[in-house]
Image (tube, rainbow, N blue to C red; front, top):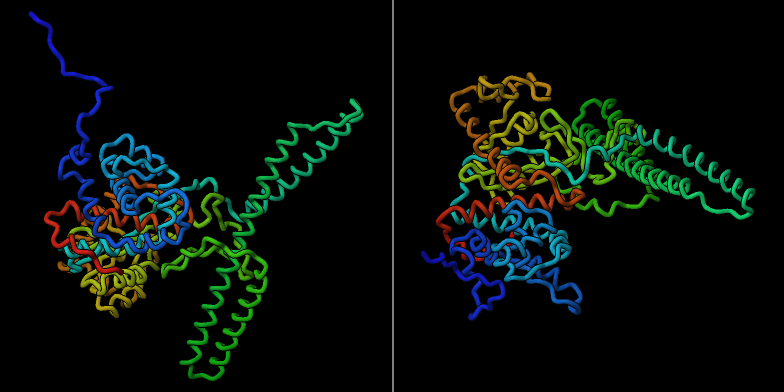
Amino acid sequence: MGHKKYRSWNLDQQLLFPPSMRDWLPEDHLVYRFMDVVDVLDLASITDDIHTKDPRGTRPYHPRMMLALLVYAYGCGIYSSRKISAATYDMIPFRVLTGDQHPHFTVINEFRTRHLRALPELFVQVFRLCGRAGLVDLEHVALDGSKVDANASKHKAMSHGRMEEEIERLDREVRELLARAEQADAEEDERYGQGRDAHEISGELARREDRLEAIRRAKAELEQEAREARIRKLRQIAENQRSAAKTETDATERKRKLTRADNAEEEADRLVGEQEDTEPDDDDSGLDAGLPSNQVPNTKKGTPTPKAQRSFTDPDSRIMKRGGSYLQGYNCQIVVDGAHQIILAEGVTNQAPDQEHLAPMMDRLLDNVGQFPKRLTADTGYMSEDNVVYCQDQGIDAYIAVGRKKHGSDACGQEDDGQVYQDNDVWRAMRDKLKTDNGREIYRHRKHIVEPVFGHVKEARRFRRFSLRGISKVRGEWTLVSLVHNLLKLVNAPPLHSCQQTPQPA
């Protein structure tokens, strides 16, 4: 019996004809569908920025290829710029997408961080493509938030009280080490006649001095934030008192309100005068985006409370509770359409409670879509009298839970979820509304609309930690994550109706 013959295998075999990279993947592969959508996006906001750079030097990679590489990597659950760069060598879809080009990870990261401001406009373009594909109807939207880890450890944060203790302790240790070093030098000079460095002591001294400087810098920044928070609060008090004085009929009480307003303004001006010589924060451009921001707990004098904390790694992030544990992170918000789980609006803040997010998130939806939805559902974290009144004023039929639902309980829930139950007309009306058969049925769909989106993002695509630091960059990355979610919904929803038309810019 003859020997079995094998197929030829020669790693040095030259290709006789130039290969077509499109033959390496099936025609309907996901990477081709991603590129089809990226090809119709208007990238003027990116290309205009690129053209402002010096034209001399190395030619940049094509921006459409770089954007396609970035969104496809996020769609595959790859977020590290190093891993994305490695994938252009190791994974066929990435090789095909880049045309066998291999951008260095520093180039990928620079492209991502440089063009974060262009992402909101691209998010709207992709969302509008979803609308043209019939994936949005605005009949029922759901709002929810989820805590996502910052690119920082909660063990690298310190309270103001602890900072003061550490500064005092390290300052004392530095003085002791300096005294020991001087003593050692004196002994060596006496013994050898020539001084030499005490290496062990000098290294230990440098480490303590570096840590002392870092803590002092963080303490100063925390005190600056607390002072700014107090100024904002005083300005708000003055505004509220003056507004109340305009409708006050009693002359004496009106005068008191105006006096309180003047006192608050004077105190705010005094605090502003104290911070004239402080350096401005260069990375605070993303703090004021119509969304609430966490205010450093402060005293009436504008100083941080002893328990006020600040992270050394990502100062914008905050300690937040998630389930039964705590994390150093951000609060990520989304508004999702009930038809096909398309994200209509997204945002990130460093404020843990959800209550103040409802109105600004619905305003963002209005900016993106051009109209409010017919119906809104949200969990008990968003329940407040102001939010209910806001929805009524905008013509939104709102169903907001008044308590956490227990297993086996009714749809609206009756257990407190960290909020004080308000026994007033608005809360009672919402509770009664949710107890009706129609209210139960509508609210029941909330978890089928918004919660699976967080499941797709955090479990299927494993986005559990931000790659970037600082709230401005974090907001850009969350926009990218939301854009990719919508893009995946779009390319996986046959047929794509009229998606080959260029979308109107936002």
